[in-house]
Every structure is written in structure tokens, then in C-alpha cells.
Image 1: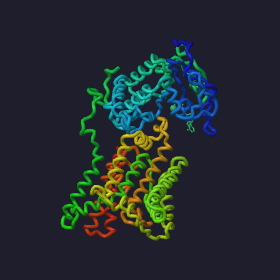
Image 2: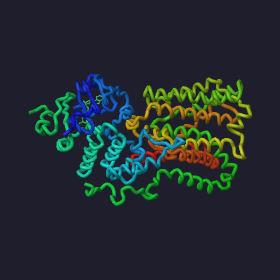
Image 3: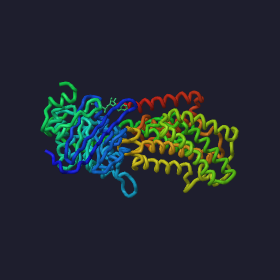
Image 4: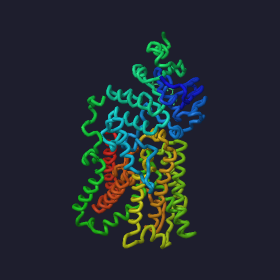
Length: 247
Length: 330
Ligand SMILES: Nc1ncnc2c1ncn2[C@@H]1O[C@H](COP(=O)(O)OP(=O)(O)OP(=O)(O)O)[C@@H](O)[C@H]1O
Ligand SMILES: [Mg+2]
């Protein structure tokens, strides 16, 4: 279902990460092509979030290489990942709770006018446009994050990522806190990224969702990469036994 | 899927701004109501004791100027999720350093040394907080004591007169267009402080850092740099307050600023700045500071003993902090 001719946006090679004595990731390799959706699955503590933080520059890998569009990068900081067109929806969303929706949408990238003052009008109108486009139902761009429901917050975090991503979006359990309708909405947004040729790495505990959305499935167990399957050529039983290690 | 019922918000007008009254958050206005209540109380109770005279009211404004300047710095510090307990000691060290230098080398050198001393102490605080990652409470508790000691030993507890009339006019006792220089300093500092806090990326990053430093950091904001900057800003503004004291009193002494810390913290918190970061107001701090000044003045005019004044002020600060924390837990 994916044209394998295009160059991958992201290549991970032999990534290893240890926190002191704990090895969170061992010998992980993966490539993601433009417009491809790869699901990352595994039990709690398998190392999924850690892997996303390595790609996004929060943690430096202990060893291994990261290549973005053919260029090997040392992802030393989060702003570097962002400069490469990579956006992340973290498991804890990384929103500033007491600030407005529009300030969060532009956190760290606030536009200013020629006097160097914040250009609130641009931030507000862009936020309203985006929120409408993505059908994220929040009371207002002026609303404070703290006053939003869990689903609305998730919507803001996803809207922010899609606003800024040009190559790759990493989603850490984006629907874990969502109801049925909101989950469907997020799934539609993820699918729409295909047409923008943006690669997606999505972490999910819902195998239904994984099979619905992904082109390939990558399984982690206790930091070890168990395998990668084309979604069309595998089934839930195989993935479950890969996740658990039981047959 | 958009047909699905959603309970959290009304769907009818999803992008409308909420009506003005709903956006007004009562806590923001507590300071104005409190200010008004205290003003009215003293105006009535002290109507025969001279509280309402122009002279007394303008005295209140002049007396609060240094505390207001310090309060601006503290708004930034608290908003970033830190605290600075050393501002009172910085006032004394800066004022003394400036006074000694003015008498030896003139006004400009004195201003530079005074402000430089405050920025340097702010730098020490900032590096320990931002890069060594020590809690600002402990760092500035230590530097508060340390520099109070420095202030005492600097001139052997002596008071240093400042006779340079250009300096005292500019920083304390002069006037421009009939308006006292202390008022000019207050107005300009509040204006600049308000704009930087509300309308610049720096202000937004300070708030984001205090609100959720991890979110700020993954958003590309250099959290350590923000922490360093607010501690230095606080040190610099406390030094300016020291110069204003020296100019107004035409002397510097180690006791300058000694009792200001509690007043400034109270002014800032009453003014709507949260103790744990992410939200605050520079204009609120001004009103809070004027309120504290008015309170001091009124309690003295009422003839309360020093100990009773302390008790009443303590109770009011307690009430203010309670309101602030309730808001945070909402
Ligand atoms: N900063 C850290 N310091 C030390 N150990 C860590 C750190 N971050 C993660 N770990 C460890 O690495 C392992 C993998 O954690 P990670 O958060 O990546 O799991 P996960 O697959 O995302 O789990 P979940 O499904 O529960 O979100 C865990 O054993 C965790 O304790
Ligand atoms: Mg996780």
C-alpha cells in the first residue's frame, strides 16, 4: 500500500538507550517514508515513549544514528527536531495549562510585529482557522487549557503538531483519553496527513486502531525490537504473541 | 462523526469569545476591591487625622516607589516558578556600593557600580538556580543572609551620606514638570515592565517556564536562560530600588530594604501573581504595593503600636495568599 521508491524521511539505525543501569532501548532500527503510517506497539514500559523522545531530541541516544532525509543528525535538542519538521504529541501533551489555547499553539514560536511585540491577532486567527479545519471543539482560542476537557486538550496538542509538522509527526497514545467520536476524529486527522506526505509514527495500545490506520507495525518488548510487519500481511494474533512473547 | 453529542462544551457556537463578564476572573480584581476597601476604611476612620491630605497621599506614593520597583522583578521571578528572597539585601549592598563610589568617583560611576552589584548578585543567584539546579528558595535564602552580612561589613555599620545633588535629584528628591522623580521612575518602570511581561516573547516564555517547564523546553524555549534572566532582572531592579532609597534619603545604610521582602511578596501576591508560576500581573503588583503602603501609613496614623501593625499586616498577607492558592487549585 506504500510506494517504496520514495526516500525515507527518517532512518533509525541501531539505536540504543540506557538510563544508568537500565537499558530502555536496544538495537532499534526503523525507517519511515513520506506519507507512511507506522504503528509502534508494546506493553507498558516497553520503551515506546523513550523511543519517541529520542527521535524528538529530548533524550540523546546512547549509541546509534538518526538520519533525516538523508542527512545524519545529532538530535541534541528539541528545537533541532522541530527545525527538521518533526512534531510530537507527547503522552502528557506538553501544554502550558494556565495559558490560552492560542499561546500554546505558538509556544516557543510566537510571531511578533515590527516593534517586537507579540502578534496576538495572527495567533488567534490562525488558531481559529486550524481548530475549525480539524473540527476540534474548543470554546474559544482564548480559552485557558486548564478549563478544557481531556479530549479538547488532546485536540489542541494534535492541532499544534499538524500546524507545524512538515515531515514527521510522532504521536504517543493520542487517543488514550478520548471518547468514541473524538477517537474517530483523531484517526481521520492522522489519515489526512498521508495526503500531505507527512510520515507518522503512532503509539497505541488499541490493536483495532493500529490495524485500521497503519501501513506497518513495529513491536517492542522490554526495549527489544521484536519485529516489523506489513499490516496487510499480518493479523492480531501474530502481533499479540509478538507483544507478549507467548504463543 | 461530528454529529456525535459532546458534553464538555456547548456546540452551538464553538469559536465564539465568551461574554466579557465570564472572562473576568474575580481573583484578578480582588486587589482593586481590596485597595478600594482599605482606602475607604482609612478615609472614614482617619478623616480627622490627615489621611486624605494631598501631602499624605503623595507621601504614600513616594514611599512605595522602591517596593514597587522590586515588585516588578518579583512578578517575573514568581511567574517563572522561582522566588527571590535576596532582594532586600541587594537593596542595601547596591545602595552602599553606589554611595561609596559616588563620593569617590562621582555619580555615573556610582550608578554603574550600584546597578552592577545588583546584577552580579542576580547572576550568582541565577547561575545556581538555572544551571546548578538548586532550588531558588534555598539559594536566595542563603544569599539573603550572605549579602546582608556583606552590607554590614562594607561600611562597618556606618551610614554613608550622599551629597551629590544631581544624583539625589535624579533618583529621589527632584522633580520634572512638577512631578517627583520617584513617580516618574514608578510609572516608567511599570509601563516597561507591563509591556515586556504581557507583549513580548520573553514575557510569554517566562510564563510558559513557570507554568510547565517541560512543555516550555520541548517547545524550544531555553528554560535555564529564562531562569537566569529573571533572577538577574530581579537583582537589577532591587539595585535600582537601592539607588532610589539612597537618593531619597540622601544616605545609604545597611538597614535599607531590610523589611521590604515581606511587603514586596505580599504586594505581588495580592496583585494576582501566583506563587507557583505561570500567571501574574505587573499592574496588579503596583496596586498591591500601593495598598501595602497605604496600609502601613493608615495603621501608623491610627496609632497602632509597631507590634499591632505587624500583626494586622501579617493577617492581610495571609488572606491574600489564601485567595491566590485557592485560585491555583481551582
Ligand atoms: N528518564 C528516565 N530515567 C530512567 N528510566 C527511564 C526514564 N524514562 C524511561 N525510563 C524507563 O525506560 C523504560 C521504558 O519506558 P517508556 O516510558 O519508554 O515505556 P512505554 O513503552 O512508553 O510505556 P507506556 O505504555 O506505559 O507508556 C521503563 O522501564 C522506564 O522506567
Ligand atoms: Mg509511554
